[in-house]
Length: 256
Length: 305
Image 1 (cartoon, rainbow over the protein chains, first blue to last red):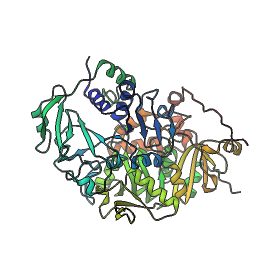
Image 2: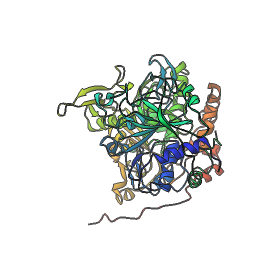
Image 3: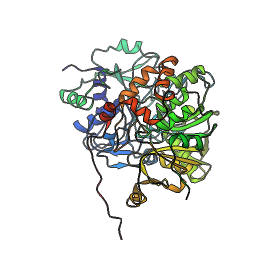
Image 4: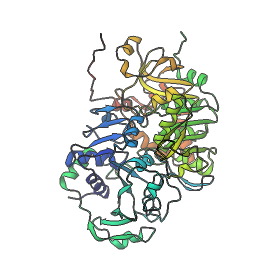
């Protein structure tokens, strides 16, 4: 069955969700990944949304944002952002998803600006809840386009902290959460060395090569001793993704 | 008792002053007071500071109209499409004017408003640590906890001049029912000096009393109640209408350059007198397509004794 790159990334994102996870869902592709995981392999996972929603079943209709009416219908709890952030800060959230404009070798993300505060070259939208998720969730997954200008040796501004300068940086800075556990890109899946906390190439998407990944990464990227192949989405995963994104807004670029 | 019912035009003219700090978009992607924002633009308010968690398109529109000198927010853009072009033009090129931004996170905005609501100067958090937001030019500071010795970030209180909050219904005194995820709506209402409530329907006091758990804002905090059906369009209002996704897509294309944005502005804001004219321009067919089709009514509960 043919599939798009976005469908592959949604499936890879969903597979990071475990059945006992409390997931801080966020926006864009993770909205779909959560729906997919619930339908396929993580029926008991709980999803929380920072506008103030907690739900444990897929929404009845396609979601473009967490604030869409179908995300409230069938929810277990609708409340304030403060309550959702309380769960996050108090260590109750096991997994979060975030995206970024720039990521570096220790998984730090910049979504604020490129340039200087007084002389902004490119103004990016900002943190949203991303920085809170990166600081406070027990683990988090980064979803990114794999391009050299986005995979930089060192981000100029840390919006959402990964492992900082590596090793025990998070502890030294008083951060509670466990840091990033995976980076799902348009070409590969990367993970982090348990000691140095540096990003490592872990799995290649079908058709991608190690050379291509290295060329599109702005530092000398290390590779795992055995590099996996990312499993393509299964037929049943694709059926669900297409059910939750019927017009292909997120996964088939049909409307942009 | 003071008369609190105003038209949008009267309410904005009377309660939003040049230089005010104003919360808009407190419930994130839903219940965004677009109608109020457009009236602010029509009245050409100046030097506003906009406060919000994320802002899905409305901040971008108000910034592009030159009403804003500063933004205090976690995210400014267009949630399904990405960047806000007016925000970029203002920050990168000073078009139509230079604006300042204090970068917050969503949690930091809720904590800042919560501190304002509690009447205390700051609140500590375990977020923000190690990020660029802890730099000296930003409002946050670090501290060692006097009890546990752990590192903390401090978020100073925000006490906005005004909060414009969109909800489903209120009575004439501003006692306001809200359902769905409310974001920082309650914190904003409790922290702000002036509270403007924009609702789909004005209901009797009895409707409020019959379900006090659904009251998010008590009326004695409210300065103005504005009945403005479809006032949140194109954002969704639970129980009334769905999100108009297409509007976000077309705005993204139309606002890409300054000229395109000015054309959009004339068509959808400056060339119209009020929300009625906006709804006429939007058209019946579109409105019909956004109506709630799968109703899910709550069941009554017993508050008796």
